[in-house]
Picture 1 (cartoon, rainbow, N blue to C red):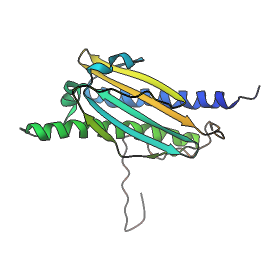
Picture 2 (tube, rainbow, N blue to C red):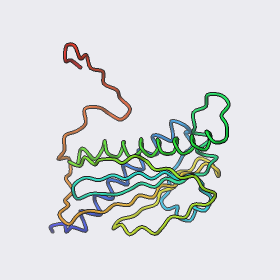
Picture 3 (cartoon, rainbow, N blue to C red):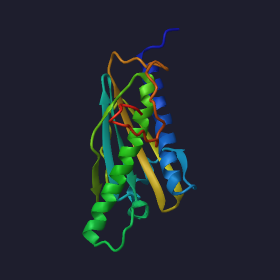
Picture 4 (cartoon, rainbow, N blue to C red):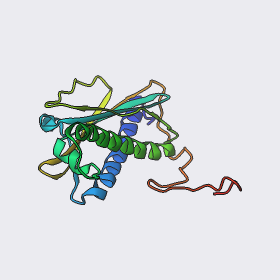
Length: 194
């Protein structure tokens, strides 16, 4: 049986979700080992007051990640360097969740190279509010994920993806990245060596 476009779409979306879960747990567990994943989460949006959104896209594939968290969780993740006034604290909350969204999507992008996909990433957009309400997503594929370490430490991620009509998932067809996530390569510019 030849897989139809819907099979390719589901397979690609499943791959993105696997990379999202692994990437989020990898990042969150560096901060707190107790984080666990569960599917779903749209029911818990009411308790979230910090949001970061970041988009990705390449030929025939586009989508977005929306991260929602309580102020308590993001505040605990913020770097601290002494006393900070309230206005700077609020800005720091948005910057922290925005950078987390950027790192998470960067990890997903890094893994998609092995499928001959190299999406371009947008700059994260961040919102702080007393109550966040998300519009319904019109995208073709949508999934919610919950990452929780404790009752007040919950991160929700909504992933949406739209695939073009000509899209086909390449399995193992792309060039593998030279580095693993988190590695740094130094260059000796004078001699052109790594």
